[in-house]
Each structure stands twice: as structure tokens, then as C-alpha cells.
Amino acid sequence: MPSKPLYRDPNYVTKRQNPWKFIPGTSPTYWKDICALGRNLTEDSKLSFIPPCVDDSGDCYAKIDRFEIDANIQKWDNTLVGYVLGDKPFYIHLKIYVTRLWKPTCSLEVHSRENGFFLFRFGTKDECNRVLQSGPWLFDGRLIILKQWSLDIGLERDLLSSVPVWVRFPCLHLKFWLNTIISRIASLMGIPLFMDKASTSYEKLAYARCFIEISASISLPSSANWKLTVGKLLK
Image (cartoon, rainbow, N blue to C red; front, side):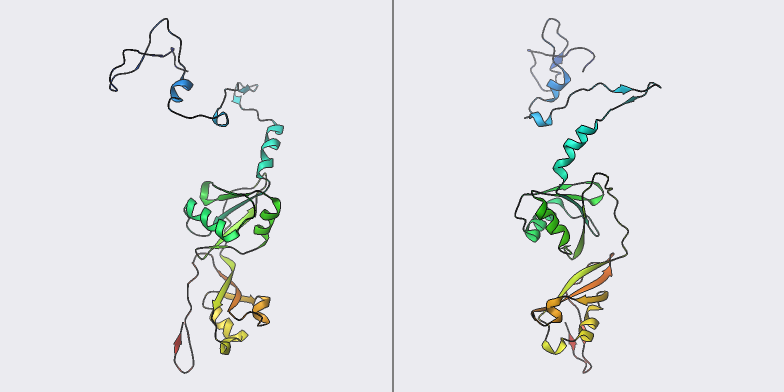
């Protein structure tokens, strides 16, 4: 609140003059009223003054009751905390991308936090668990690290030197469908671990899907080159 009440000067003419003068005998205007001018404030945006508590040494502190925290954390129960390896993506790009990628059957809210973290708040527990347990999920060829939100979760990035990623090799010729050959191709990206069930059983031959451990500091390439013994280079 100002040291003295401020009042609107009815004789205010130009913007270069100060429209607030100390005029005795008029009703006071407070800072909250001044700063609210031109703003469409809702009840959810309003704050109020709550007197601080004072300890024995005279220091002030804010007392937060446990019931307030318990009532607030319930709305974050179906929330995942995550980040994209590498540079932080633009908020709107990531929001549109994960909505198309996950295809949730409920509402999905995306909130940006510090240190490149994002909160993904789902409308149902089932959809939250489905996204967490599926994957791994990629954004622009980079892994999305996801964790279930909890009351004491920290927002520090895990120091990962490598991460496992599913990689598809599409339109692979039948003559190359051999574990040793696929291992050679997959080794261009990292350390091959295994193929999925459909690729192993030749159930789906549209692509070979491999689980590969790659360096966390690089992005996945869009293509791979290999050379036959006759000297022909393939891509």
C-alpha cells in the first residue's frame, strides 16, 4: 500500500502528466486497485495477505499446513515428469508432438518447468501408466526421459552416458535378414542388444526393429551406410 492514499486527478489531461495526486477528502485508492486497472482478474488469480509467524529469535516465517499440501497434490497424481535428452525443445512443438505421439484418450496438459523439464498431466491414471510403461519415446530422434511425479521428486537431470533406444530399419531386403548382418548395421549407431519378437520371428518384414544402446550425447542418424564385399555401397 502507498505511504499515503492516492487519488485520481479529474483534471488529468495528457499522458505526460501524473494522473495520481494527493487530494484530500476523496475516497482512497490502493495499489491492488491501481495495478488491476485494465486487467481481467479472476478469483483464481487473486492473492491475500496472511500475517507471517515469528519464531523466538524474531525471524519471520510462513507456516504451511499439511492439509493444504495434501489437498493440492491430488491434482498432480496422474502426472509424469520428463525431459528430452539434449537441448530443450520449444514448448509448443513438444506439446503438439507428444499429443500426436501418445494419442491419449483423455485430457493431456503440458506444463514447462525449469532446467528443461516438462510436466505431462493426464486426465486418467490408466493413460498415465500406459505412456509410462510403453515406449521408449523419441522426440526428433532424441529420447524422452519420463518418471512418475511424486511429492519429493527432484528436477535434476540424470547423468546418463548412454540410453537404450528402439530403432527401425525399413525396407530391409530379405537377403539381409540375418542376425549377424543386422548386428553389423545396428552397430553403426551403438551397441545392439536384441530385436523385437515380430522381427525375430519374421512376422513383420516391413522393417527390422532393434533395441540399441546409443550415446546420450548424439542424435540418431536418419540413415545408415554399409558396403558389400563386391564393393557396392548401400544406404
